[in-house]
Length: 195
Image 1 (cartoon, helix red, strand yellow):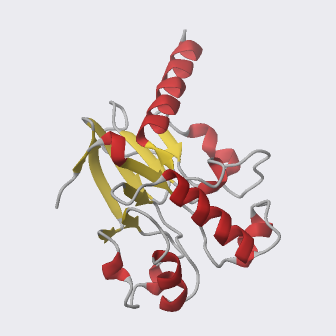
Image 2 (tube, helix red, strand yellow):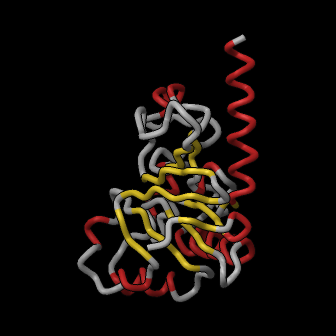
Image 3 (cartoon, rainbow, N blue to C red):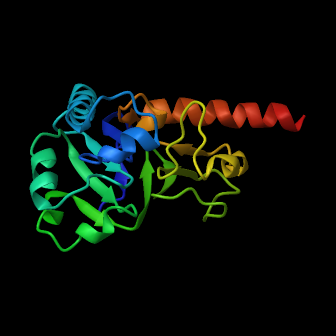
């Protein structure tokens, strides 16, 4: 299994929640219905990600069974690695798993020499968290005016952590370069606070 990747071809996303009607209300997503949400996210994905690109999806991919998963997977660009979210677990028995490059609970990867820990959930402690390992996550649906159950806890995140979920990124996958810029800025801002 290859864990080293070329940064110019790597994207991250999470919490697409395809076919999940209630998520629109829960997260104040700007869509009238599931079809509109699905189509917007698919279109944003394919306008961002090329056929040969690699996408790390950090969980809560889709609701429904293999018919829904297959319909979505048939339309998405890129080679997709799925880090399982809480909503994905119950679908593991279906036959779509072989459509992903790899399906796992967590992953340690290296992109252009940057070590990154991928998990659906933000972690307070993770290997390398005190050094220069990044942790990318989803689950918490970070957004403006976030009133979610986890909102108050997010102040404890390290500057090297970032929510790659669609709610936090204009319903688009984010490139490695974008994540790098964001995390470097967060690190810089945290150093300023310490002075």
